[in-house]
Amino acid sequence: MAAVIGKLRGVQEVLTRQEAARRFRLMSSRIGELVTLGDRDTVFGGLDSEVEALAPDYRSHGGLSEAEVPLVVYNAEQAPAAGFYKSNVDLTRWWFASA
Image (cartoon, rainbow, N blue to C red):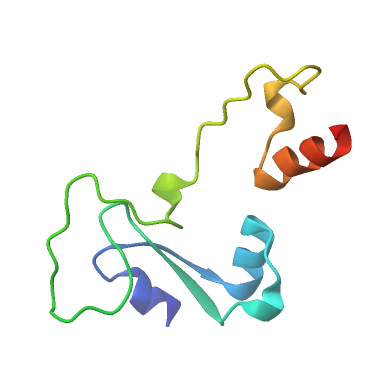
């Protein structure tokens, strides 16, 4: 199935449950057998029609094209170096430890 889904237009990548859990640090018990990632021009979900025109600046979430989000820490004394932050949890880990 993964090979078939992977050939569909708009699909960037198909991962097994184990691959997705490891890569995205998710609980495997909450993931289906396969995880399908859309490309930057594709959004998955139900529509009332086959195609829906979206504004050029429309943003979905969850795609790899949106995986890198800039983080700006301003006026924070003793903030860790930029390399400390690998994922969102690192921000909260530092934030709560310094509170």
